Length: 341
Ligand code: GLY
Image 1 (cartoon, rainbow, N blue to C red):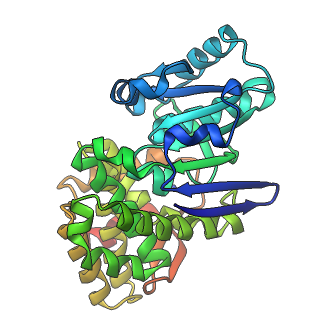
Image 2: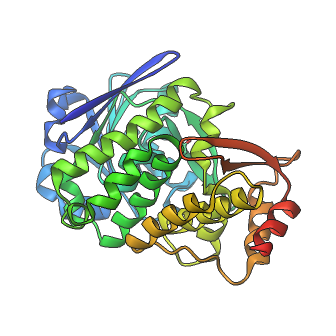
């Protein structure tokens, strides 16, 4: 097991990579714990929930709503949750986002932690303290910055994930490689078989390296007033593609990164070899790299998604590996550069 301590202004959060769900009793008195999980995780690991107070929610992005928040709060009241209660979110990004949000508002805030069960949430969603829900068609428009006491990245639970979900997490790992640690890219290129076979030791190392990149950034800028924006590399376009196409988050983000790298070439920021290296790696892991045909549809979604950013979008470009830059760009400029490709 490897540990990362994420220090923010007024909080310390420990991320335990390789720790197992069942060991949560070593970190918090089980009598205090109420679990929030989804129906898939509950079904797959039913025996591990025996004797534990558990609230089961549905799956999918639509579940990240105020309706589910109300449902969880009703259950917490029924279970007589008080200030001493510890809310443990066990699942992927949807569960951790919503459990963290409820814990932050119930009784004005109770302690919480996560057992992160998908590769995507282990390297991204469950780390960094962004918790919230979608509203009025806008992703994560309501939420809080609030750090969990701990996050377990239970690698043994990845075994039950569909391959497509593993790929989705790999895109975020590749993102962390580009913006913060090129060694991640080399390791992924070299150790394809170890990823395919879900080699526990290798996964522990690659998740550790990936979370290290994110933790360093979050510890400097928890509230995304500056530096944290670079974690959105590939996301401006990626989020829009995720909404318009039948793609997972990582698949869409992979395409978003390719587009951002293409624009970085157009602006003469990078050598085309950087683009080629990343595109090759994405393809190696079966991630799509082609933009959807209907670019105007994608641009329309971005303008809706970013309607609150009036003075231009903060677009993340690359000046080299480990050299992301935040650039103010307007939609027309982005569209023009994309179409030029
Ligand atoms: N997923 C980007 C962030 O946590 O800031």
